[in-house]
Length: 496
Image: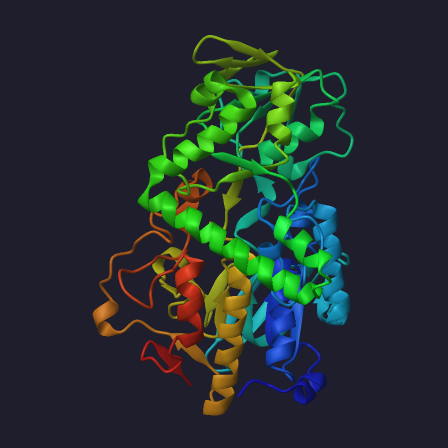
């Protein structure tokens, strides 16, 4: 059985659960573990020197959520601000969770895990981490290892290898590693990319720059609206308690999102036309048709939200513009396009995405033997085949990431309690003989969701099979009813 707090206090560096990452996922796990499994000891290893995860990694101007905070926030912590929030407000929200749940003593900052090994004989994980404050290696052991550190490499963003990249005489910046001393005032800036990062950056820097050009290889779907929630405002005017406001608005937004998501699959041309209509209203027919009509159907990649139409306003008033073309090469003074046009620039910002990374790139071992994740199958998008007492948090990509955090935490806490009830100390998702020859499909099917960051490195992720429970469901609206009822005694879960 998993150790109790009393026994853990004797072994100060042994815990019932080790949680990796003090971001929105890891703090959510810690909250639910304290609430649903009181008495279980846990520690959070965080590589950075502060909490926040992605909201601490990214410091570029205007950094904000691309999901509404009523659904991106936790179900247990009401959000009281505007739906789309800047990073500083999200960090404040997470700091309140740490304070409310008294999590600070459980967090070891500046601890970067460099190795994790499971031992069958000892029935525990040994985790080796580098303490970046002392530059010393430390080791702890844990019965359960829970990866909650996100799904991309926090150290380095993705930049394509363009021809002539080193010939440019100006400054090249990736938003993920934004320099504190960058001076944009009066500069000609080209932002390469057209996703949520570009849509955030452009209106935030447009007033300082001489001009900003958004250079996109292919268009992205955008939608806009006021950065306020009319239903929340109306409920608050009636003195409805914030907990009720949060839950009502959360359900309403989820229903709206479901309608759009399902409509996008069933009637893509209708949704496409509605999204295009929004752009036409702000930028006119010509710009909309030329630069804002993607080739893929809505929701095969994320819809980028433009609160208060701020990016469109920057384009309408001439402070920003958009160019759709392919890069031929970089030049001394900017970028030469395949059309022959050259974009002059003092600064080029490569808002070209991030590097997908499974389990933070941590070398995992079982009894001293390396685990190759692409050879493994996902177990319900939560655990990994033949990997004992291990879970990984991978949230939703079309619904707010955090909607899955709450669901997965409920499931893992239920599993931990079930192990105690059975007198088991180990649980391992195990392929049956009839599962051994399953096709090794993508983590997420290409027709379901196919943004560049997934396509580039999906081969590094665990595989999905062609049957339950060896698949990851990216659909919250299906999984919210399924996950609470997953059978903890199905034959694919082996207890010891």
